[in-house]
Amino acid sequence: MIKNDTIIYIYLFVKQIDITKRMRILVTGCAGFIGSHVCERLIQKGYSVVGVDNFDLFYAKELKTKNIEELLSSPCFRLYPFSITDAKTLSSIAEPIDAIIHLAAKAGVRPSIADPQAYIDTNITGTLNIADFAFKKGINKIIFASSSSVYGNAAIAPFKESSITDAPISPYAFTKKSGEFVLYNFYHLYKISSICLRFFTVYGPRQRPDLAINKFVSAILRGDQIDVYGNGSMMRDYTFITDTVEGIIGALDLIMKNEVIYEVINLGNNKPFTVLELIHSIESILEKKANLNFIQEQPGDVQITCADITKANSLLNYQPKTKLMEGLRLFYKWKLDEQII
Image (cartoon, rainbow, N blue to C red):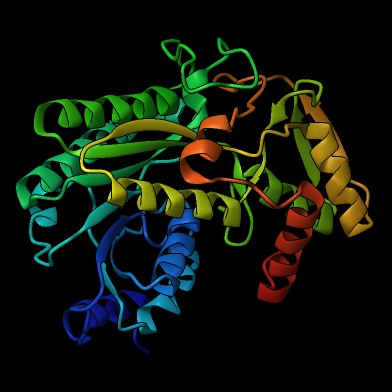
């Protein structure tokens, strides 16, 4: 039996790819939840994709491999199984690149508290490596996945891009803010355009198994207990994956049309729900009650996220279309279709 590693390397070194007539976009984190959807959308829109992913073991490698199963059969997709923390390996990417969509990161607020150095290595040093790679290769367009976590608990909802973001409450948050600083520095010094997109609780098919919606659906289906931090009143601005992807594509369109720009833009839904409201919505779709266990709030968790999307609407024509109940139904259908419980 051929192992997944072997398949990946076969595609890397053997597959013949004709991308001469398409613009090439380098996507880091291409095998992840958001990254795999972005790659598919780029190819649909006529781009070729050079993907980078190290298949980090934060969650099962098999899930990430499945995310890009169809991409691997496309002549418009090439995979490099590299880590962005290895600058020398990154430099071996030889194809001419028109723009970079930098999604690769160590994810998760709570795990970042347990291992901040790993988050610094990937999210700060890795982003510096991507910016330096762009500079050395003459690439002057970078779109960066930042996070709503940079607002901490200081910002007043809905969060505006102009809000002060100097009080992060987790290592994950400060590494994402640091990524924005890295890219602003390269914009200032070398005229490399960057758009930093602050994502707000993205969910949908292929969502990471550690995230709330995925965990809640599985727990309710199995009859397992759900730990609810605090009294369940924390609010999140849940944003469906297709809306986030369209925002990323809008950012790509914007950066391609401008010679030199630097922007920070929220990509959210502007409609926050409490954790209990989310759970009750899932209960109604599954037609099954959740077994709730209320426990102490966790360090690093912000009380509310809510995006002001005025700027995204103005610059990207960003208009999120998927309401929470519709998105949850689509997610549940995916879970059933894939038999992932």
